[in-house]
Length: 340
Image (cartoon, rainbow, N blue to C red; front, top):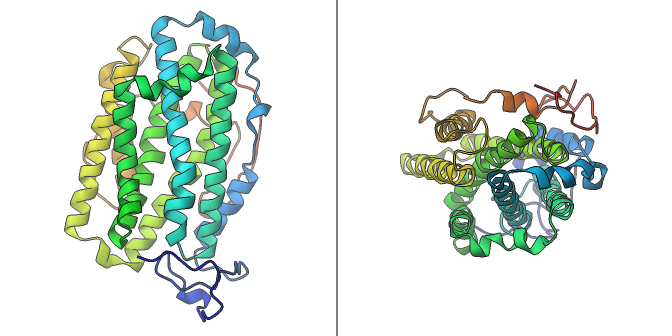
């Protein structure tokens, strides 16, 4: 698998010849002719979703954090540290490790925008850390001291490193599935712990920040699900029984990794998040992601905390990820009884 040329004047590729990877683009972003309309629709949606972290009021969280129980503080800090790692990883991974092989300009646009949004999320976490911590290094360096967190980080990064070390068609496809897992399981799980605090009236500014971040992550998830489904049509030869077996194993490992992590940070002491609920929710997310890319469910369980889906939504916002744009965009603050 070769990286695309930045400038390729000898190319005669037309719009119908474009491929997700393995194409021969000129390097010119000719966007009046589009092959992958879903990608351009996502690009426009991402632009309409533009927001900035300092617009979120974190004033109340300063005092709320001081009133959290020790268990709640631990869950908050470790969740935040985990989110910091994942967005840091994605910012570099997308630009340095995924986008160089993508040969369709409309998809390049979305990946660049996603990388910008991941960097924006890193700034969001910096705002959150500054609001609640007297020593920000404690949270930023937590991964060095907490071996459970270090173990999880290492496992998440491994698939991406495999693509970096061995850039093959199969490893690119596996990296797409790894992105789907990252965006659709690991992030969603992390957001849930912060929403749970807000549901009890605590850390509402943090929850509002996460709502903005999650709205971005929804488009990121849709991006990689579309990439996988498009590659199934373009490169059906890659979807071998062996590849599918590897993907199912990736999902099983991710489900166990995230379930173990969730139980570890909540310790059964976060209201509404028992060990059974944490595990079932992760299993539900895994099944939902598999189903979105035409694979069979593994666990066949229902969503045990449906309130999370409603809590994460913006009021009166209507979205069609494939054809439409965000109809309404609000930067309103989150109140105690908002959305549940």
